[in-house]
Length: 379
Image (tube, rainbow, N blue to C red; front, side):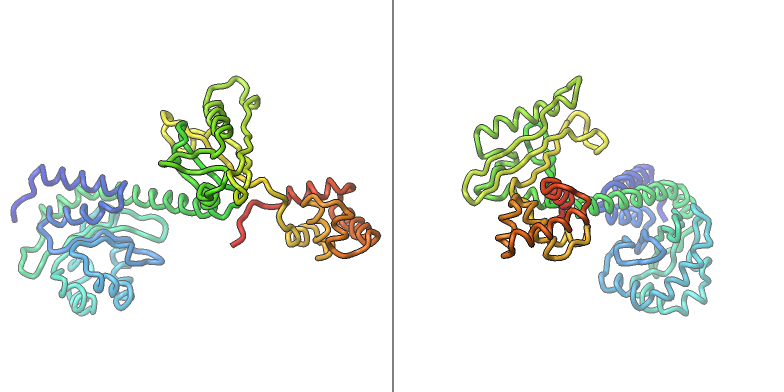
């Protein structure tokens, strides 16, 4: 076969390194390696628990064959994987020599999966091991092609350290992506809106609650051409000042004003409480692009805290209703009227609430329940 030239090898290495940071480039990188070795098919895959079709990147992708590998032929692939697991990291192997030609040719994997895809002789390398999983690369030659030789094996061995680094980076980036997705899901469950914006108020991130606040036509805040704005001109000027003040250097950070009330633009909207804070550098944003986080909460009476009061303090349903009414701003007499009981009965309930919560005043009970309310959205 014609030997790979330096330009082709360098281009393959560049493609591999690019794929480490961009998963969408991985199929192109594997295809470039296949071409470098003049193969009929190539594969970069993980072997280990909880395997799925996303764990292997192959050339000449056939979705039906890809799925069959994880369903019909899973048992044989596991057996071959156990054999492959004995190969030292970085060492190349020929599949027929490693598995045994008789054993390989007798398998369903060979007859129904490899041969139909013109996979008649493979050269591979185990590139990384982590916990119960390992990653390998395999390139195949077709029925009418020459077998791989020692020079092919030497080239693959030279490329293996790069593949190892790619696998390490992909694994690490995959973990970071999982963490990011979990964090976004967690933020979306909050009833507090969370927004990250740059100094010009361009939106960088918003959780689901913030999206809802920004989308309300008569709400206090809106989004125009990608920028957050307050619908009241006075609030808009105050918000701009607050953002600039938050990002400006200060000898005493505690002296900064961080809170602002933004007023609704109409009867259907709701006034909002805003808290503006600088985003710490540790969030991974470029230091040249400072950002602020704006926490947003509606200014409205306390929500129904009956269930929380029952679960946290062991109140009965009736006691919890009284406690929730007090937390919403009602007096004891108003709470008694709302619950259709005499004031004397209301005082009895209040005494039990004091006993169970450890409080001595109605205002303390109200503050306790408001503090106990968790900012989590009901689904």
